[in-house]
Image (tube, rainbow, N blue to C red; front, side, top):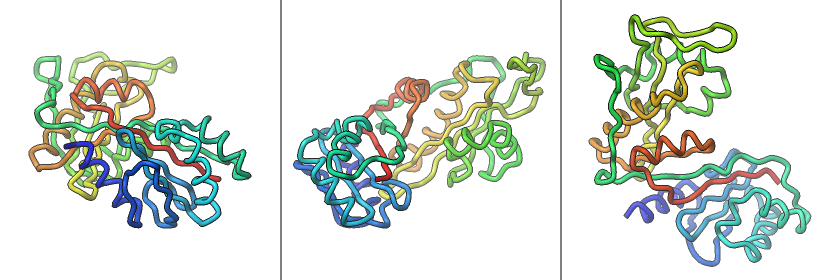
Length: 256
C-alpha cells in the first residue's frame, strides 16, 4: 500500500527511530532529512504525522504544539506558528507546505505528445542541453526543480523545428532545437523515485510538463520504484493529478 510505503520512507529520512502514530511523535534529530539543517520538519501522511526537531528546546515546544493541533494542522504554517509562538518559540522562517503525492502503476495515466513528430529524448543527467535549460530558467526555478540532482536519465523535449517559440514581454524565446522541458527522478531510500520536472519559462501552460514527467514516471515504474511528486504551486499539483498521482500528505519545514 502506498500509504505504508510513504510512511516507511519518511520514517527512515527522520534519521532516528520514529513512526507515524497518534498522538504525533516528536523526536530530536539534528540530522533529519525532513528539513534543512537546524530546522524542524513535519511530514503528514494520511491521518498521522512525524515531527523532527533540531534540539531538545525545539522538541519541547513542538510537543506542546502537537498536543493542541490535529495532524493536518501541523502542516499549516499559520496554525503551527500561533501554537509555537504561545510556547516562546516563534517561527522565524518557513518552507512549504508542499503536497506529497504517490502513484501506483495501475493508476498511471500516460501523457503523450500532442504534436505529430514530437518525441521525448533520453539523455544523461549531465547533458549540455539540460544544463542550458536549467541556466535559462533562473536559479530559483532550477533549484526548485531538483533536476541537477537526478540519478535517472533525463527526459527532454525540444522546440519543434519550424514551430513558433513562445515569447515573453521582452521578446525572448526558444530557438528550434532548444530543450524546452525536462524531467527525471532522484532515487530515494525505500525504492522511491522523487520526480523532478522543469519547463522553460516561455513554454509553460502548454502541457509540456506532463509529457516529460510521464516518460520519467514510466521509467521509474519499470524499475520497480514508487514515484513521488512533491509540489507547492497548484499547476504542478494539477500535472501530478492528471498522471494519476494521489495526494497522501504534506511536508512543512520551520525554523524556530
